[in-house]
Amino acid sequence: MSNPLLLENMFRLNGRIALVTGGGTGIGWMIAEGLAVNGAKVYITGRRKVVLENAAKKFAEQNKGKGSVVPLVMDVTDKESILAGQKVVQANEGALHILVNNAGISGPLTPWFNDTSAPQHKDADTLGQALFDSASYSDWSYVFGVNTFSVHFMTTAFLGLLAKGSDDEKLYTSCIINLTSLSGNIKLAQNQFAYNATKAAATHLTKMFATELALKKIPVRVNSVAPGVYESEMTYPHIPPEEVDKIGKPVVPIPAHRAGRPEELAGTVIYLVSPAGCYTNGQEIIVDGGYTAVNPAVR
Image (cartoon, rainbow, N blue to C red; front, side, top):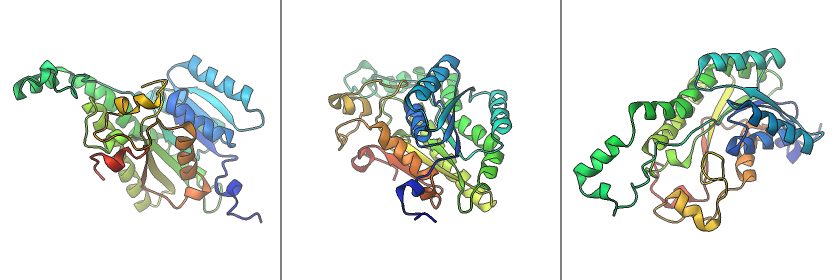
């Protein structure tokens, strides 16, 4: 038998079936590509069919003999759409080993909030009114729907398939990865109260699901990965080092003095979903270049 301590065994993904929401671009694509290039079959979901198909086609052209990427149109804010996607995976695969809940949106923003010379900071009444008027209940509900509610509904819809995936190999357990954010771990608003609150809630959902599934003896692990400042379609497509702190809005500059790289994020996910990570459950790994090490954080 091959030595289990060999890298090819510890981080083996051959034959694994994965699904990454919001997987056609940005951080989702970083993760999907990382899983697929190492041997997994990865379903990437999103609402834009052309984007998904282009990503899958590009991967196939550049990575012959590796894993594969399969486009699957899905709206994570619609239960019927989620169930339709679940039925596709069930019919094609019969099981799922890896679920990455990555789909997310930013906003609503208050771009003036950190500028204390802005007129909105005239006094407490003015500041309160400006914040009150900056967003509606529907604005907050929409961000929570994509960033938080979808984590619950995706997890529950695919739970049965994930449990079946754990039956494929002794000592292996399927894994859910929730993409949260450093923004859910810091005590700063970063001009986006709603977004940061959604990510904090997603972190807590991770811990609740991990605990409850373990107590119910369901063999599915749940962890989260909290990225710091990364280039992505949702936020910034290119981040030079001199712009990192402007974007991340820390009190103390980010120690790494740069944005994160795709391999640093994908590598963290690969660890958690591979045999090397099978003893890790209910944890959140923050991959932020030291942001939360030097800025006000909740832990």
